[in-house]
Amino acid sequence: MLEMTALSGEFPADQLSRLIPRQAYAEKVITQLKAEKLIRIHYRDKLRGYRLTKKSKEMLLQDNPARFAFYLTGNTETSQIRSEPTRRMRLHQKSESYITLYHAGIPLYPDAKPALFSECPVPAVNKKNFPLFYSSREIKQLGPDTTKIRNSRSIGILLTERYVYVLYNTGCALLKWEYRTEIRVNAFLQYYLRENPYHRPPEVRGIMLGRNMDTALRLMTSTGGYKKTQFMLDTTYEHFHYVPNTPEGEILLKLLCSTKLQLKLNQLLRSDLLPSNSQLTIEHDALTAAGDAVLFAYDFDMVRINKFNTALKLFGYHGVLIAFDFQMPVLKEYLGTCLQYSSINFHKFKRGFFHETP
Image 1 (tube, rainbow, N blue to C red):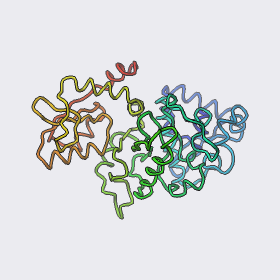
Image 2: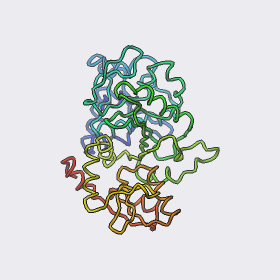
Image 3: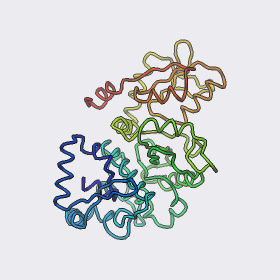
Image 4: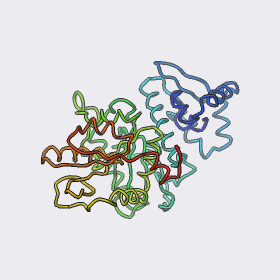
């Protein structure tokens, strides 16, 4: 609890159940930490969060300076917390994202990964250490090289064996979006990572984190709002996935990080289907015996889903969409009844692929 609060500056009270699922135990932990003067509650502008006290900061810095000095010293946003609601909300959203990453088994702390973004010489990064997460603040340690991407809405990047994912968190509302800035992020990462750890410009994709699956519908139907200042699907990334900050989202993130598991799932889904046809002018991963296009949408790639939907309507194709059961309500609302749906039982998948029980 203290470590996660140090990481984000202010831990949102409504996320406590994700960190400590048993309510009675969570309440006991908070009561004890307050009694020992290690945390304090900050409630203002309808935002309730937990902050570290001077005592807990000193304790963490003494126990592990390599891990916590980055967050708890100097004039950083996690050390000197501003009171404006927008800044606090951003800290809360980062915290939500960090919990998802943490439960997906992805290292968060600087001492647990190579210092890839540094003005000093960077050692070669072994891909066996993937996945690795670097926050936007860690990336900005490069100094002047990152000037043109300082206004990005990204919270950080996720390095995997096959892709670099740029992470955003939209919460439950539409994220402010500046297309030209985010395009520069894409270009910067391809250039900076082209030699280490990748040996060519990596494929950069987007991941939008959000409160729940309902938020995905708002993103996919957005037209950018007044003056086009809000998120809408554009050409920033050829692939842009949506992952909810929920237990399901944590497993989905694990899946996105593993090429091996995605290939295994695709192979399983293709077992009673025909191979795809490159001559067809529609996004698809396989064909039915009747020749209908099948899209694997379990990775919730919003760009591909949108292209699939457009082609179905434009060319009058019949289609089949395969996704997890928890994604189905949103997909059906977005796509309507013009195609067939096939649902993957999420709990069976989790048990079979990750050996986890509900």
